[in-house]
Image (cartoon, rainbow over all chains, first blue to last red; front, side, top):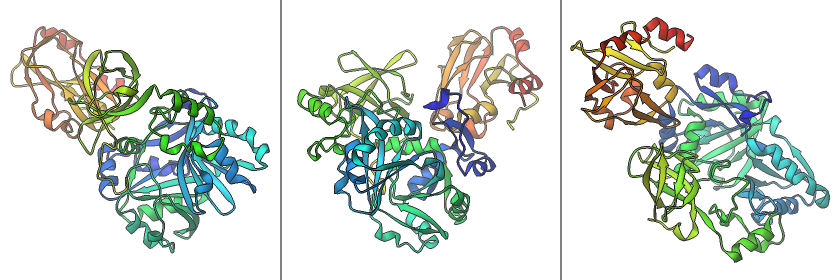
Length: 370
Length: 129
């Protein structure tokens, strides 16, 4: 993350609202973001699982690709099969280095006349520098529109019911990982049925100037709980969804990270495809696994991991107490042969080795969208 | 602003020391400021009754969703009671840190150590409030 840099922190259009609500604000990916509101992470987490929560995720980066070969370009710089997307459909994907490791994970949206890539704020500059050199080859225009766009994620089983009265868009017609352009509370936006929580919900991409009015309309329903990055992290980890910088990074490949479903080697050449073919043929040395601990101490990001043979096996990648399950959960890389459900290994918590058990994510299995 | 009761003693590590009915026994926990900084507390690891600690030893840990913190004992002595309720209800430390969220009771080994603790005013100054 860019926390250590000296660049001034950016603020989203909702900064003053977060402050007024008493949120705890932290530097995150170059932005001042709310990690939690006074109600606390557990309350926010449960609101999303049971009713509806609202996240400011305006730090996310939006790239627009235009030109006749926009689809081909994005197909070349990402691993998933972009031509297979219908107009109005989106998918999850990864951007790779030539060596097959992950530059970033992203969402790809196919419009009639353009493609939108949504990337992690902490990686946006790196992503742009990585893919921009290939624009000439495809004759496309790449625009980083991040600074003009804000993003609110309305997440929870009640999201559709709460959002519908605010828009003419027929939300029931938008399938999971589909989107449409329309008005919400009288303002233009992209209404996308996507999320990072395992629950049903919508992500609303809009121009910065519409942000505050949109927030007020959503919270004004009286049925929406503002939720911060802390709850976003516990919700996504319960679903086993990867977080860049934790579970995946510049040293891990999608095949190692259980993201092979995002890699379409049959689609033709793309950045990183040769390396992945080689890794697939030669064997994947390690796999990202989910684990639980029998006791209640939490194995946190960075704690040492020892595989079933007692050998050092990197560090805990993500770790928290699952608010829904009441047990510690986490992720780590283990040698592929040990990545089976039920394998016992160890994590070191403050100098003490404790047993951990491999489980198959999602940890939480009752989400309204799995 | 964090609640800092006038009649308690404090450490720079955000533990409090509270008198009990027995002049040689004090109750210890973490301050309102500390619980606020930690956020939702999900697990508290406490020592066994009968264990002895020297001043500033680690006597346990507090796990919150986003952070973990070690607990430093403000005075030397023997553990004479632990708050069993915290095993099932760790959030008591969030809701009532100085009352139902107390953690341990310690029989003082050296009563003079109490004089080295911070008063409410000094702790408030330490927090920069």
